[in-house]
Length: 541
Ligand code: G3H
Image (cartoon, rainbow, N blue to C red; front, side):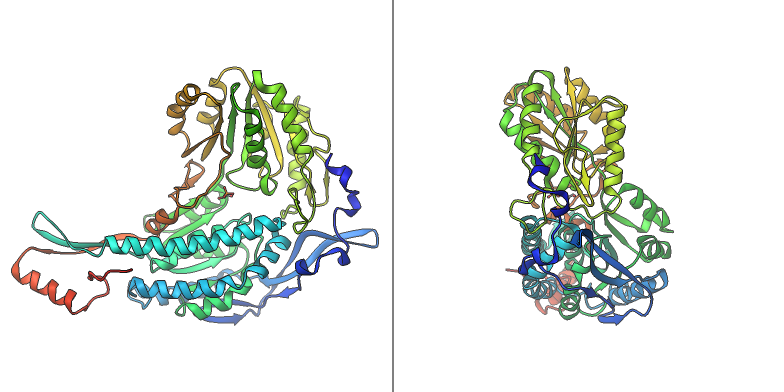
């Protein structure tokens, strides 16, 4: 049982219990990045508290981590002007730079970025409570993503380094930037998912305004100087402050050309509606999801249980791809519930730096109250908490909670919990989970568990147009990043993957001419004289 290993009062550390390599200094961050300058902010600051409580004198309180500029709309608009100036209607140094030179800038950023790993991993642990292994994985995955993006862009450029002749027209077709991109990532992957849009947006020649997620803000601090040193001024700008105030004003101004946002559909809709010319706005959105697992009678029990635990509870269920509802067929139900509950009870709660800590502090201060409301509602309507320790919280730690049987009258049936609650719905007929998916507002992914090829094949075809990824005997997930990551309905707009991201942050654009001797001579002179960055058959290795 989870709590037996801990006295509640000692779940959180005393100051002296914190290992040296996890200890963190307070950071009063006074600057933001605009137009290539780290500018002092002279207005108010917001305080940052960790979800990790520090225990002293029989009391515990969230650790104070530091502060950041509480910028306002007016300041955000000034930053946007710097980004616009750098873009200069597409004629700036960055949007017109040769791809190979943009790559050199990104490579120099990557070189310096690699040194920030120990510091950023610490901030991930302290700001969002992500365990050490997952924090390191988030950093490493970001490094891989940048490297893969560079390689994908080289290949894209190689493929475009030729002229095509069609119906008497010569053309060179390439991809060009779109304009000023507003990048906002989510708090559960404040580094990786922000960079999954930031890097492709930059490398394609756009200029960027980046606003960190609502948690995981101070972790960006080590990168400000590197951004400043590695990119021409105004190409990357970093703002801080309330989203409604800053992002809202930016959208209202009409100066944002691409909105790259990973968060809730409610906020995304609000932001999009604020833009005065929706036809000028491109949106790349990763939004809500309520991915179900369907465990069929002939599933391999061990595999299904392990994948469902990991799928539902990794990082306390705070993944958009998490399995947020499990449908389990009645024949396998008793065995599934027994093994699933047993394994949930074995999950270790602890501080992010502790070995094997799986259940860690939740960054959203109101989350435990919300999760408790969902549980109380389900219990009132007939569900039981199956695991010992379920439904219990201690400050920011919320112990995983398995609810059974769940039905459509309960809030947990349709609300995205984004936390460590696992609702289980029993079913007889496959039409029951299928209807759930068809009627859902979300359409990201599904996991199917069965050992029978015929059973699975019959489900693949009806489900493939409901969601964007069917995982067979495997949890739902975003990676590997080479594969498309997207969703239907309220789950996403646009597709992200290493290659797709290069596409969504660019537009196909071309130079064409009629096939005449004179035009051929002009093209040859431009190409042989290397007179244009765009019209060029140079080959990137
Ligand atoms: O929170 C949503 C993330 O995109 C999920 O990514 O499946 O790699 O954890 P992941």
